[in-house]
Image 1 (cartoon, rainbow, N blue to C red):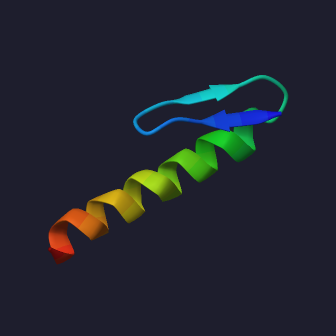
Image 2 (image 1 turned 30 degrees about the vertical axis):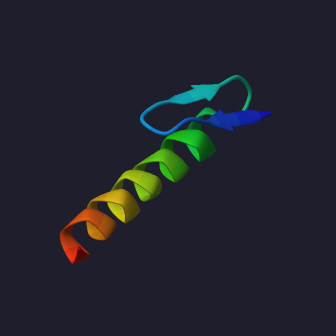
Image 3 (image 1 turned 180 degrees about the horizontal axis):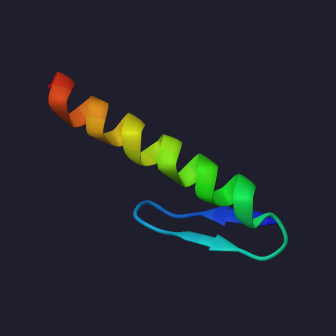
Length: 36
């Protein structure tokens, strides 16, 4: 199971997937704030 918070990630069994998705989320959030 993976849990993703707004600014951080919890991971138990899918470390690489969570880190990857968190990186992607940060990029998306960055793009969102620059597009405003």
